[in-house]
Amino acid sequence: MNYKDIVNQLREQLSGDNKKDQEMLQKRAEEFAKAGDYEGLKAAGEIIMEILPAGTQSEVYRLTHLDGERLDEVHQRIVNMIKDKDIISALPLAEKLYKKITLDFGETDTAKFVSLRNPFEDNLCQILFPTEKVMNRTPFDFCTFITTYAYLLVENNATTNAIPVLEKAISYNPVDPGPRFELAEIYKINQNKKMVIEVTRDTLAIASSPVAIARCYANVAYALTDVRELDDAAVFYFASVRFAPHPAIPMELKNLADMKGSPIINPTQKEIIDTVHKYDLEYGPSRTVIEVASSLSNKYLSEGDRESGLKCLKILYNLTLDPKIKDTILKLEPDAPMVMPSDNNA
Image 1 (tube, rainbow, N blue to C red):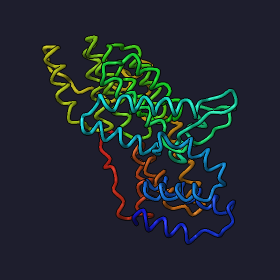
Image 2 (cartoon, rainbow, N blue to C red):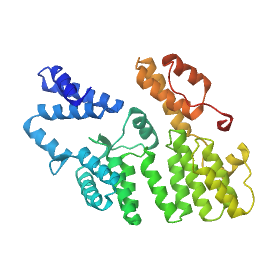
Image 3 (cartoon, one colour):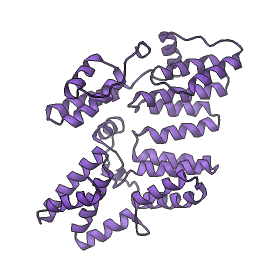
Image 4 (cartoon, rainbow, N blue to C red):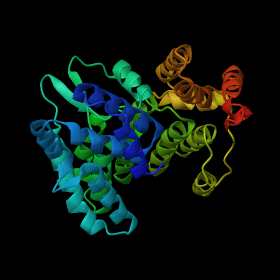
């Protein structure tokens, strides 16, 4: 359904009671966000603005717009500039957006703003990063917006300036691995093995996909290669591909073999686990991430919310490859695409 049709549909559902209509539109906006429906989210937001009292409408407009343009549209314009390789023009606009966000949506002694994208992130954040402060939801994904600004700083050779910016991005969504990966990239550039490992340790605690876990181990492998801890670097590359293959890793292993002057031997599972633990890192998915996915899947399915339950079950299966979970998914969605289990993930 296109934007115009969604707007017409939502307007037909208005009752004339502003309070009830705002609640209905907020609920629909959350549904659109959960489904990744940008047009629906935009439509719900526009109608909410229309029915707000004039004073409130003015304040909401001030908070959600920059120079007359909605903040998410400003960010999309920045992304388009990056795609067009116009990095120089994108940087000042991204900086302006960053300053707007941090000024109008800054943390106080009693409250903080968060850009949690779904109930899974919401629950994981509350468990891993508890706070007594009131958690206010941001109107857009500020974690991503700020990470884009940090990326532009790095592209403009301002890596040192990008570090506090990424830390700010993390504060808006502590369970999004995106800004943590960007932070690891900076420390890789600076050949700071200690900080790559520290950031990786934090990222593994929140990683909710095999691809994210694989990237964590690959980052450590890269840092260990820089300091010529070649045997351990090889083990971390093998650890990475056991969670998710990547076309660059065979070349990295060949490079390690050339540096060593001898073949790379495929380590056993025990050797991988022991090496990962040697650097005080966990092997595999976080127990907390698994427990949150399991708890939420049970909750949603018991409430009859099949779609949300399936999303959590898929997170759970991709992390564990438990055949019982696979069977449950296929009963609910017979044609569901599955991650194929293999001995390498045992």
